[in-house]
Image (cartoon, rainbow, N blue to C red; front, side, top):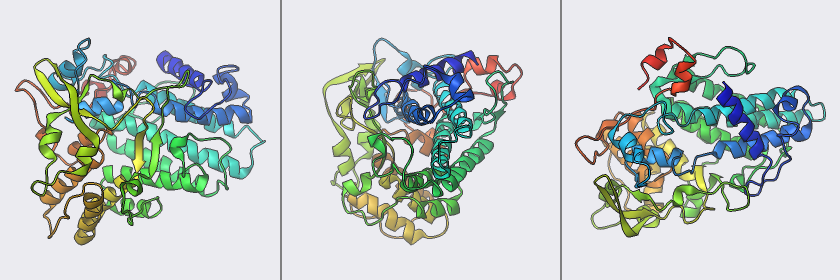
Length: 453
C-alpha cells in the first residue's frame, strides 16, 4: 500500500515537468490530498495529463513492457552484460514475483489507476466544468483506467488482477479477481467511457500529447476507445463485439499505403529536459533470429515489413551462448514514438473476427489488405482451415505489430505459446507473470498467490 502511494506521488510529480508537448502545473503542490478533497479545474485537468504521462511510464524502457514481452515472445534479446536476468529469468528460468522482471507491470499501472479514480471523484466536486466538459473528462479517464488494467491482465493472464481499487487508500486490499472478471471490468469501463464521450462536446478541457493527433477531441477519442474495445473483445473471443466496436472506431479498409495503415495513437517521447526517452534504442537490444527465419513468404519475395524494421547490426551481439546479427530499425532515436494502436492492427482484428463469425472470404480479404500493402506480398487464395487461418493471422500480426508487445500474447491466446522457439534445451516458455511478492505478502492465504506461476 505504501509503495502504491509513493508511486502515485511520483506520477503526480511527473505532471510538473514537460512531457513531449505537454506542460502542466505542479500537482505535487498542493498535492494528491487537495486533488481529492478540494480540487480545482486546473488540478483535475493536470491529473488527466498526468494519466497520459503515467501510462507510458516504462512502456519503452529497456526493461519495459515492449522489451520484456518481446523477449518472452522470441522477438528480441537484451544482451546487457551487467544483468544476466534478461536471459536467466526471462528465457531460462522462472519469472520471480520479487524481482524487477517478474514483479513488473503491476505497481505502475495501479498507481495510474488510482490517480484516475481520484480524478473521477474530484470531477464531481468542481462546479466550474460544464456538463459536456465533465462527460468528456469522465470518458477519457475511464478509457485510461481500462488501458492500464489491460496491461496488468495481459501480463498476469490466468493469475488474475485486482479490480476492487476504487476505495480509500487505507481500506482493506481488494481480492485478486480471475481473468474473466478482469476483462469484464475492462469492457465495462470502456463502454461507460464511450457513453460519456458521446456527450463530451466539441473539445476536451485539457490538452493531449501529439501522439493523440487526430484523436484529441471527445468524438475522435471515442473512436480510439472503440478501437481498444475491439482489441479487448478479441482477447475475450467475443467476436460479434469486435465487429460492432470496429464499426465505431477509426478503421479504414481503403488503405493503399503504409501511412494509411499507420494512422493511430502513439506513446510519445523526447530528449527534452525532464522528459522520458524511448530506451528501445538500447544497443544491447537485438532481433531474435526466428524473426529472420519467418520473414520469407511467396518464394524469394522478402516481406517489406522485415526490411523496414530490421537491419544487419553493426556488430554481433551475444551473451550466455546466444548470438544475433540483427538489430531493430523500428525506433530510430530516443524521440521515436511507440504504437499504442493503429489502423493496421484494426484491420487484422477485423480479419480475425470475420473468420470466427463465419465470414471466411471477408477474413481473407482483410488479411490481404495488410499482407499486400504492408508486406508487399501476394495475397492468400482459397479457403483456409481454422488452423491455417490462425497460422496466417499470426504471421501477419508478427510482422505488422513487430516488437510492439503482441506476439507473446497472441501465441498464448491461440494456444500456441509452447510452439515459440527455444534457443537451448534448458530454456523455458514463461506463459504469464506471477502476482508480485509484495502483493502476496499483503494477502496471506490468497489462493491466487499460491497458484501464481
